[in-house]
Each structure stands twice: as C-alpha cells, then as structure tokens.
Length: 53
Image (cartoon, rainbow, N blue to C red):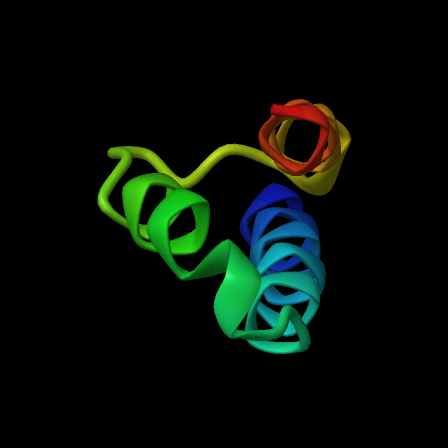
C-alpha cells in the first residue's frame, strides 16, 4: 500500500512539473534530475523561489 501512495505522490509532482511553461525549464530539469524525485510540497517552494529570482 505504501508503494501505491508513493507513486500517487510522484505522479502529482510530475503532473505539476509538466504543466510549467518554458520560463521554468531550468528549475524543472534540475528537479527532474533529483534522486529520489521530491514530493510536491518540496517542489512547489523551489519553483516559487526560482520565479522570484
């Protein structure tokens, strides 16, 4: 059951990242290269920080 929950969380993260426009290409590729892929509650602040720069 835990594995299914992890997959669900990762799918939310991937869905969020694929919805970003090309202005976020750099931060998106950096996040996708992370191992393991962080959950959405960690990814969202990274994207916000990039947007503010």
